[in-house]
Amino acid sequence: MAGAPARRAVPPRPRRGRAAAAGAALLALYVLLSLFNDPRGYLGTDTGGKVATLLAMERAGALDPDIGYWAEPWDPAGRLHPLYFTYRIGDGWVNVTTLPALYGAYPLFRLAGYRGALLVPMLGAVLTAFAARALAGRLTGGDRRAGWLAFWLVGLASPLAVYALDFWEHSLGVALVAWAVVFLLDIAGGRRSWRAATAAGLLLGTAATMRTEALIYAAVATVTCCALVALRQGGWRRAAAAGFAVVVGLALPLAANQALERATLQSDLRAGRAAATVTSAQTAGGDRVGEAILTAAGLEARLAPATYAGAALLVALLLILATGGARSGRGGRAAALAGAAAAGLYASRALSGLGFVPGMVAATPLAAVGLARGWRPFGGRGPGAGPAPPASSGPVMAVALLSLPLVWAFQYTGGAGPQWGGRYLLVSGFLLGVVGITRLGELQPWAQRLVVGLAVGVTCLGLAWLSVRSHDVARTMEALTDRPEPVLVSRLGHFVRDGGWFADQRRWLTAESRAEQADAVRVVEAAGFDRFGLVELASQPEPAPIPGWARTGSETLRYFEGVEVRVTSFARTG
Image 1 (cartoon, rainbow, N blue to C red):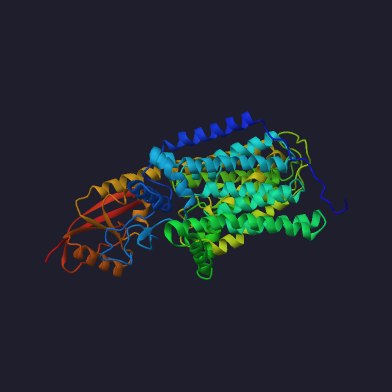
Image 2: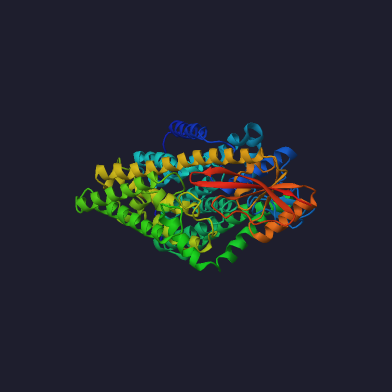
């Protein structure tokens, strides 16, 4: 029939037994790696808030995310709530921004504690690795060896390995969006029907219940797919039908999540989060530029000109390596020098001490290969020959790159440094990384080994940092929990949230400003306590005198490498 799409065979699937064994092996490796971390410390403060909520739910024996507030009678607005970003919703206090992953982890948490809850992000990472295998198969025409290479490199040599070991929703969000892109790519190539479009919408909508940036990737991926359907398959009607099916599928989980929020919280939590994100995009323009550079390629977690220059240099070196290190031999000397210089930058970063690598390209060097070579026609130099014609990587590149400006425009400002691999850009890093993996065969063997080595090395740095950070957080919070003061007042906004496991083990208040500190002192007085401790960075000046209170002592504790906190004790004089 005229205008009908030319259907192409879906690349053959691997044997189910082998796939199940690979998934189980990857999950087992995640479990093993997690044993090096302290379950009372985490990669970021969002995890601490979720753990504090899971503990509160466990105590209540119900799916109620209310974490409570000991000072509510004297601070009903919650300005000094210990856990930053806690909101008063109805009669409760809520510190989470999404419910599906939390509720999914709750039975596992009750069964096996935090390590049990980690099965949720671990399974998300395993599903992402399988999506990488599927996507690589499409891009190489069904090359199984390339698919399995993508599976293992994404699973163990990308930021997904780090996020698999911390209770955030990032791995789940990437998995859902990644599989949606696979379905949409099949639709654009005429290999699947509108049912796949509905399935893609369901996946994207479910991802959006956990990650706001999923809405951006949903919009860009859907528009890209519909444009290709219209251009390749002869007609905008078919494209409009596919787009409509995606939108319907996307709306269903969003509506279900809204109903869940209203039933449990009497509030539209996720919708409010999305609205706040849109509002915040209108401010902080200068900060957004710096944070965009940092999350794109920063090796250091600092908003500074030197960091921006280092990010630009790293991207340039990796692109030269990926371009000049081809089997054609042209530019081989420049590529070798660029590769050595890039390795030097990574080595210098590692020697400077453990910490966050916030940049997408910095934490996913394979993405630079995709960025450099993904626009070329597939050279067919992968690990093996695929039985079907390869799909163009152009649509995948388009989704990855066209989404970036929108994500940068709407991403939360103030958190670009303390994150791994551009956590809002993980989908783009994943897509570019998979494209890069499929093009590794176009590089000379030494260039292949170098890029993969860099990917493995920087991922090991992230795993080591998570391990050390979790133990540091747990040790510091444990020492503070054992202090004699009945109340501790933190001058660090996210400090108590960072150690969410310990948040309910003593009375805390969080007071960032001097005005809030004065309010905290009044709460301590109103609650009838005659002693408290003030927690702040040791690098800050000694606290100013407080009327009616006398300083009785001071102690410095190591928090992280190079970061110390000071606890100053006060006692009432009246």
